Image 1 (cartoon, protein in one colour):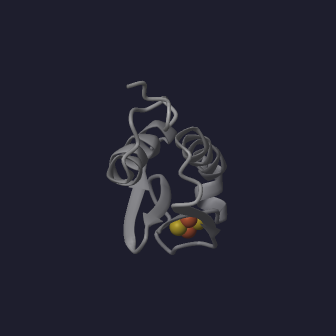
Image 2 (cartoon, helix red, strand yellow; image 1 turned 90 degrees about the vertical axis):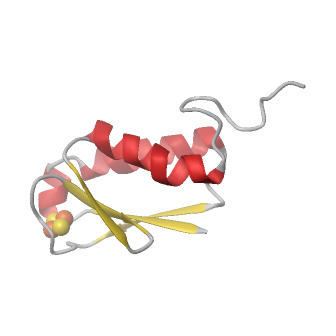
Length: 95
Ligand code: FES
């Protein structure tokens, strides 16, 4: 089980944290990984700065844009869990 926590403090909110959470959630649904990844919000992570702050388990990330957050999420969360490709739902492989 992987826990992804996105800061929803006021600074990160203004930089797009809500959209980042929506995109992560969409990707988890598309990949059928909602049971393997817990997506949570948190209060200020005390790292307010140049972007949205979030973490994968205890590893911190700061993403300057929604696209960057999604790229890292695909690489560090979806790919290790065996997600096929960016937009292809799991379980659609044909023999
Ligand atoms: S509001 Fe997100 S780190 Fe402070």
